[in-house]
Image (cartoon, rainbow, N blue to C red; front, side):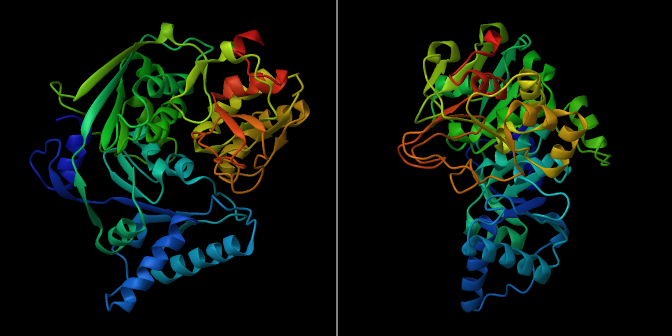
Length: 422
């Protein structure tokens, strides 16, 4: 069995599982945020009206909640949802509640690894489609809807159809001008946004072993844009060190068998990769960045669970250092702990000196909700993960997806720019 099959096998108390088997798995960790949480609360209210006992959840210590999408609250509804979350966590004894404006908080898909809330070998259920992100640590991580999340909270388990696994092998080491975002956009450009629907995307090879944890997280995060049920990378010493640094030890490192089988394998050579962008209106609509150099921009955005990790900020700071941005540029670290680290490293000063605006962690602009949405016909280059019509604001705005390196270089020139030109 491969790693995904092994984790599902262990979690379902089965000796062995195969693709398409339907099993109930025990869930180790559960996440809600200020969008999914209120939806789950509505399900709880409906169940209670039907006479179903919702007075307690299966294990409050396995559940964590964060406020990330509509913070700072842009309207009364958003503020009310934050209050609903606080009432919910208080009622059910959930202690891990990362509240906006009180110390550490941030985007859910950052906190999951930044706070070592999810560990290798675990089954992790999140109320968000990009829960796949945490598969970079060697966990089975996937998103669920409100009804499924309510069931998980009450029962501590959920049914899973064992997915087929598609293996993506990267040979060689990424050149200095290439980031994981370039690689995953290349993959999505090749296979499309539907090929991996209800399938696992597993990444491996020398190029993956060479990647930092931050870069690996970009790959698994963007697997959602290929339709994947989950994405995963086998844990290694880098993962162990990363989690040990956060005070967690005695990890359960599950790896696939030597003779693991995959539904299909794609192989790439790192030296063949180019800095790319995904043009509107799909992550699969990719083009070489250099070939888009005539595209004039209104905004550059470095943020989100995909592109505002510490390493993302570091490469942006290297490019922006001593230079001035030519267009509106917004940089939002994906958690307060990363914000503080970026301050200690001098990155925040570099960003501000370049003319960029630095703001607190939020999903607001990424999902077109607040904190910098696009107006009609505006064009943005962004480190985020989606660019369908209206994703970041007006339906007639346009978003080009790119690596933090490409976005930072483009902020300086005001046009889509290959970072090698800076």
